[in-house]
Amino acid sequence: MTGPHVTESLSAYMDGELALPEREAVAAHLRGCPSCARHLEELLAVDAAARELPLSVPDGYFEAFRGSLRGRLEGSRPARRRLAPAWALAAAAALVLAVLTPRLRHDMRAPGASPPSAAAPAPRRAAPPPASESQDRIAEAVPETTRAEPAPAQPARPRLQQGRAAEQRPAAAPPPVPPAAPPQPAAKVDAPAAAANAAKDERKEADELRPLGYAGAPAEERLARTPQASEAEAESGAGHAEDATARRDKAAVGGLRKATGAPADEARFQLLAQRTVASAAEARSLRDAWRAFARGEAAGGRADEARVRAIEAGAEAWRRGKDERDRAATLEDGRAYLERPDALQADRVRAALKSLDR
Amino acid sequence: MHAADPVEADLLARARGGSLLAFEEIVKRYERRVYGIALRIVRRHEVADDVAQEAFMRAHQALSTFDLGRPFGPWICRIAANLAINHVRSPEARETPLPEGHAETAAPGRGALDLVLEREAREVLERALGDLPAEQRAVFALRTFEELSYREIADALGISIGTVMSRLSRARERLRAALAPYLGLPTRRAEEG
View (cartoon, rainbow over the protein chains, first blue to last red):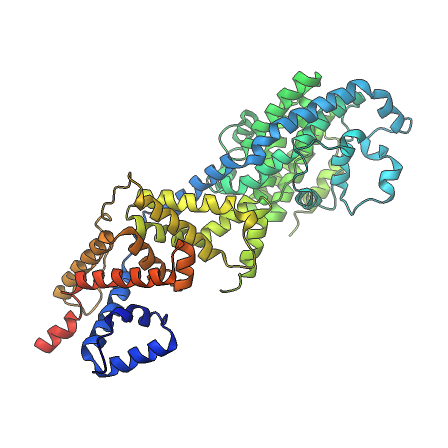
């Protein structure tokens, strides 16, 4: 044996945490001291035994863990709580603008020009950012003054908005405003659209959350339901994570009706029209919402547009997820639409169905 | 310190931008590890669950300050370890042993006596781990299960490297003493036979 026992240094020695001189000294001692060498072996055995202790986890624990964590994160997002005042501010601003500046709005448009997308002021288009058509639509739904001075709590994530808006629709996207929609007085169209735009961030938050919540309500489950059931659920705004969006939309619609007296259906339509999707699940959710909307509309251009958008959303779900059930459901919706005597946009639907070709 | 995995860094950047989907991917990567650390320190599933949840919550809240060039694992493990230690130190902590009944399957070629002794040894080790002071247990868990360096453990727990060294040494000595009747048993029995 060389020198006194080194048991107190063995723990750090086995971890390689001793400085070189001490390490060499311990190594030299171990070569000549069976007692310390055995002590080291026992310490190594303790570590090895500890590592082999099983980690007992109940079945399905981590799925439940994630679900619970998701709930806490959703509930703790300060931006979501802060959105309410901004939302109210924007609605109020839209109301004021709608009441006080109808002439200004009128003057901004060329005489006879109907959809807002065609009435964009030239200077703003002269040097636009590389924005998508849908971005333009979103921007133009908001009065110019509101755009120039966004609500204070609304600057959140412009980059994300661009990204999401850019992938809102495939190349064969429909025109931004339903062609068959009845013309609306400027004040009535602008107010809900402006307020809806103010709520956009909040819906995007929900869009971000949905895939997390979606784990608990899988596509298979949703697809197994009848279209009627899906529509009823989308209508009632209950039962699914996605319906948080529906509930918010409903609340937004209620707020709009109080603030502006605008027709609720128009507000709902505008809210749905501005929803973007970033996944197959979100596209399915949008499809179901459009189905529910069409179901609630007895007839007319808006119902027709909703049916077409439901089909396009279904096609988008298939494009993103390549789930055969999405394709089958969309083909079925498309066939049903084309058989309708009141179908107004057969060509557009055929184009959507053609996009389902493998 | 290892550089961050680019995929992980991308997920973290997206999570920082507000994507809970991206954060859930991060959670999936680390949930078992974080829960394991918590369980090995607090010794109770319910408490470990709380600790692990809180660790991810705090990490999420602090993402804006996290350096994306660094790996997430050590960071979240440290958060979990500190939360677990704080819990064990708290007056309301009631430490109880892990529930019995881990699934065990006999390894081929092992005798019944070996299995009994092994099971006994495991139970003794579980108890001994539970009997360690929380500070020693935390250091032992971070070193043995997470393989953190002494410097990393010291940083994580806010103690000196010398303290890490002494706590770890004491913890191992206590565990060794508890397991002494079982250490080297197969060798001894072979020698005796």
